[in-house]
Image (tube, rainbow, N blue to C red; front, side):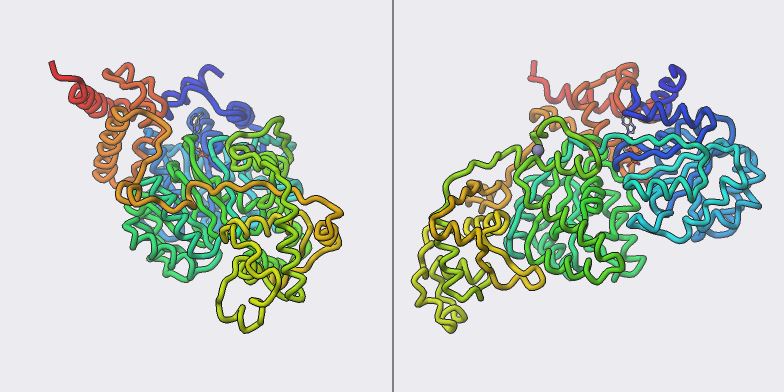
Length: 609
Ligand code: ADP
Ligand code: ZN
């Protein structure tokens, strides 16, 4: 055990294992099979990389995406661990060279795509001294999982051909059936299943509901203004939206790119590379983006539309904050999305399952209890306490007797003959003079203007609450007209009280004042300005080195490592070695320049005399 901890520091620069890493590693070293379930960012890679270093021979790592393999190989090489990737896109000569190296035992980890592997189980693999086989994104093997890949099903031959080589299957998402499916299909031999907590306390969770397109975009621009220079992803349901949002951001001088299946592979690769190398701050993407990247410093993820299931949502927000630093997630939820998603789910092959998944997602969006509790509960974990880092915890609902408000709305609904949708209802309450309203004669209703004292957004929020409380209902197939339920009638006739939650307009949704517009504020929870200056200098140096070595900046050092440097301010090699994320190779390579820079900045910052 001690030896493993030493290797962890020597090669990766970390002082201790994360939960379950040590257990999984020991299991592999004992040549036994295992299945590891860890959330994205939980630290799965170490679970096979460390035993690969420890054991003699070469480890085979099956990974579905070329970009992911490339990333991992670069990261390993930067830490002085011989690694390579074989993929079908490579020139033959290069493949041959890598294979030769592997046969000569010069490669500790060899990454192969599942389709690349098939030709090799009888050719290359028998010539290698195999230390272990790691199967990343193992849920791809299961039809039940959401990323099923037919190539993965052929992986069952591995255990047949190499029964004594330990297999470790890893995934971030697998419910019970998928879990069993993975074990069965890979033919794992009495595997131990490791399930780590899915909690990601560094991700803050926020849900906004009922915003129109324009308001959403404004909120996003404002949010990014508060997080200048940080990497983030905006997930959209539609291709056109990815492009529209990216365009708006660019017009606000935020470097953003669209990413979706309609672009050419070259365009997609460019967008991805620019993002990885911090040349673009924001990618606006359909869900196709992100699976293949390990970028550890994604600081925020926004869902422009509601995701179809909690699994998808959790995996997508999981791409933020892999380095463990505080990161933000925002989800915009609207009934219009729900209508579209319901249709998709209904038309899908497994409509019952998918509709149920969507229901759970909807309940999450509408919840007024700690959101993290709901998520953890969904993944079968019990959180003993409220998280303090979601919008509900930050702004616990304060109930008030909203009966009068509700009565106004209900009465207006009935007076339209239950034909009005949400927007029309609000317009009636707020006395809009728009032509359609007048044409329908709604301006003559008794309730016309009865709610003009409340802003539009507030009405919208209360109407969502009324839906949730069951006073009104809407046909989700159309989301057009609102209907009053029997419970709603009770409130209308004063037989029941309606308790609503007070609503506070979140920071991101507020219109900035003129002064703020001129000087975008920067919220940094961390260091004071001197440390901030040092951190900036460290980032600059990292960027220069990354450019020189043609690798992404996070391959040189993660944000977490730079922050540790800014806090510890190491001035000599010994104290630099103690920084988290500094192993032997990086100490040797970068210790001098970074400590010199720290010295320089500190001196410059010291008062004269
Ligand atoms: P996953 O594959 O589970 O999404 P990774 O293996 O990419 O996660 O690890 C996520 C991040 O956590 C990486 O930046 C990695 O360097 C870091 N990490 C992993 N294990 C440790 C550890 N024991 N101590 C500190 N950081 C770690
Ligand atoms: Zn909470």
